[in-house]
Every structure is written in C-alpha cells, then in structure tokens.
Length: 157
Image (tube, rainbow, N blue to C red; front, side):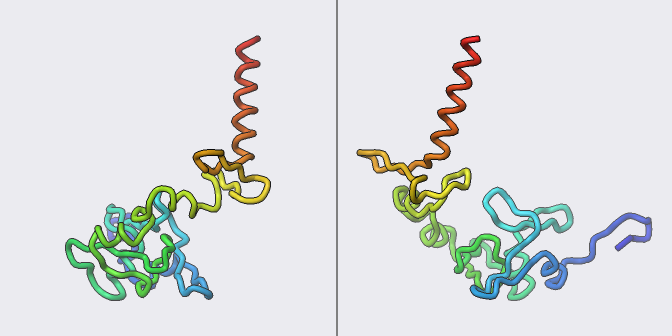
C-alpha cells in the first residue's frame, strides 16, 4: 500500500494479514508462524516500528487484549504457534512454573533430545559421563578433539 506522498505503507494489522505468514499443523491444531522469530523461537511482527510477538497479536485480534500483569502461556508448548485457542493469559509466575524454567535443571537437560548443534542424544552418538551422568554428543566431542589437534599442530609450525 502506498500513501499519498508515494511512500510504502503497510496495511493495518488484521487477522487475515497475520495469517499470511502461517501454516496449519493438522495433527495438533497449531497454527505455525513462518515469519521472523526471536532468539527464543517466538514469532515476531512489527507494528508501527514496534516489535511484538505474533501470538500476542493473534490473541488480541481474535479474543481481545491481554490484561495488565498477565502474559500468554502456550498450552501446546509450541513457541511458534499463534493459535489463540492454544494460549492462556496467566501470571509470569504461573507461566514459569508450567514451562521449562519451572523444571529442575537435571530434568530440563534430560528432556533434551539433541545437542545444541542438532546431533541426537541417542545410540552410538550418546556419551554418558561416569559419576555425573552428564550426557554428551560424541560427534561434537570428535569435532572438538580435531579442532584442538589442528590448533596444536599450527602452534608447532
């Protein structure tokens, strides 16, 4: 949309415009955001130069504004889902209690199925340290060893 001065102006935010960046997931009922995401995996959109999480926009457009002091909890646990019926306004304390942050550190770590580089924590790729029980990815361990070996060889020359 172009304004009267010939400058590009985005159409007002509507549920239809928001849905242009989504795809339905038929098994769970989630509506997955395909646009930009923040570092935590939540969809984000800009309105009047202000970045807002996409699920909050969807909830506000479909159901109404979120009361002050409340935040939206993803009942489906899918951060990029913007289905307003998968969201519930709760206090920050309740949201933390329900989510990963509410779990003890050991349970959070055990719940992870892949290392930070995307390798699976399973089969021959899983290494469990004696004593601590800490899980490590063998592929990443090999890559670190290779990197360390090459670094030492460079220093020797």
